[in-house]
Image (cartoon, rainbow, N blue to C red; front, side, top):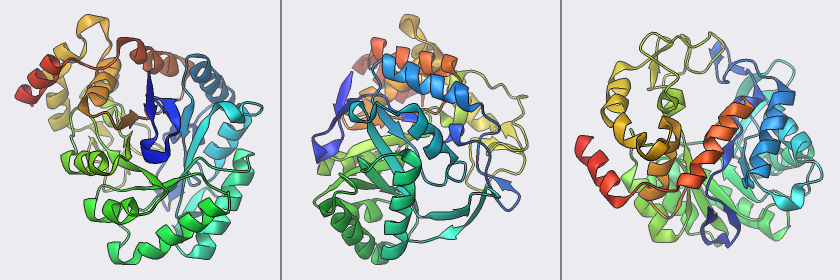
Length: 323
């Protein structure tokens, strides 16, 4: 399965690999922002399995693991750079030695410096998609950010850019830029995002789906009593925006929604995960889900979803009725 990376014309796999989890733990004070401990060699094996199964799109951010995700991805893609499309993000500042997030910097100097650091960690001389990683940055201050990114395209540092935001007014400002090609947005079968999908379709932007598996709820791994570890972004000290888990446990409201549609998602031999990805592909021609992973087994299950393809219109209608 292939899709276009928005209006850039860049061909990518319909499934991307989200590289947040493979960065390992990092924090804002005592608040965990990672997904717990990881094994770098397993992460690299997972990336290689994804490549072997036709995935060529990898999404990370400078802040994931306080730079560690980019380093691991750069190692895994050594010698394969021309085969892949790399998306990363900027805005957060951090201390790599303590793995603490220290703030945000959307100044022209800060963006250019962050890009140089990402290029170094990723061991590359260009980034295919460079994304603004500040969901609620004021819309009336976004134009200078966009203009800096346009200059970076002209300089050959990046090929295209986008914004990770769920606010249509913010996305609309970036969409006016010649080399904006993607918006990264929250979207899954439990949690639709119609306004943002409509905007991406209007401007022919890739709708890169973060949270495609609802932070793990759509893997089937979690029951009402499954507790996330204390260093996990879903754990007891999770950030305020973590709606799928509360006090380290899955949110019962979302579990109920999941269970109501489980039978449809798992029809035709799909796993729950594969059904959730199939819904996203059927939702819009613009969608590109980027499920995270920490193991080779997860990569295998995610990539197998491409063999099944999208849900049928009838299945989509049935899910809409139940939801």
